[in-house]
Image (cartoon, rainbow, N blue to C red; front, side, top):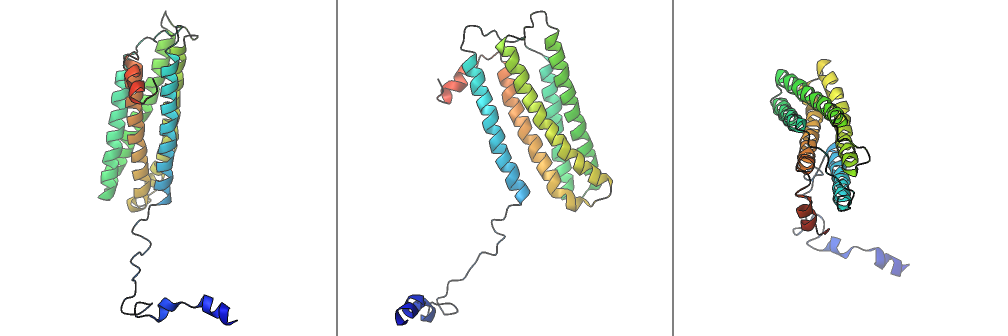
Length: 225
């Protein structure tokens, strides 16, 4: 019994540096210094997963184009317009976020409407680009380059559609009179998502529109060739 009592003793508690003593260690953490909202943490994890997904698609694209049956797909100049629309959409969402920090409800509404409108225009432009490609005389669905074009652009469009769901929920709450302060986090998350998808699209746009001329350099830098 004495042995058990000795094992359970806390000798440092009786020392001058023990709890409450002159040399006591003060707990400085208050639980907020490193706090990240769960929604932000979840979005960052999602960004990492999506980045891996698109990176694997790019690598598969580069590996497939090395085969003899690869024929580069026709370039669609409409992609330039679509890229500009997505840039404007991202800028509008940034405007909305800054307005939210100022609690400017009118600025938030303008930014959200413009951001969503440009995003829908981008999606419509992508559908028009697919139709345009389908009408090209040299169109051949068996061409792996065209198949990859559809897969990559469709994957990006699906992710943007998912963002539009969150955008719509935030817009509905705002129009129902919910205070801007309560929607600030949702607007920040939507804006971050828009910026992320813009960055992903710029990489994909450079890949698809360049005719794959620079893909070999990219794979070499990544150590995949």
